[in-house]
Image 1 (cartoon, rainbow, N blue to C red):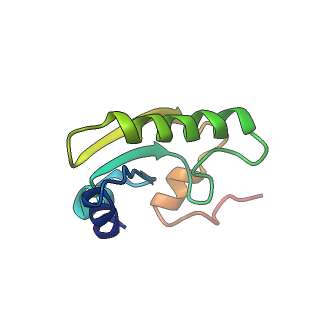
Image 2: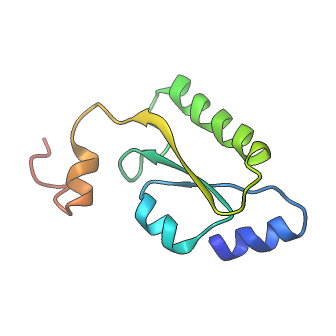
Length: 99
């Protein structure tokens, strides 16, 4: 995604990536990126949490126009608090302890 993003930016289109794993995104080096510490499959929040989904989307749209420094990667303040799914996924133990 980082390569496509840079090409679009060079053409004058403001782009932004939304990522779940900051360390991988740092290696890809997209022109602008936001990290949200949610589980895979829940980038914008839990199913039905339209208020949070809207907040994250608006944050992305606003940041795409405001971040001027290429290579900027910011971590959004939203945290997954429903359960420990994110930690289990990052440890590749997502199915352990699932109800």
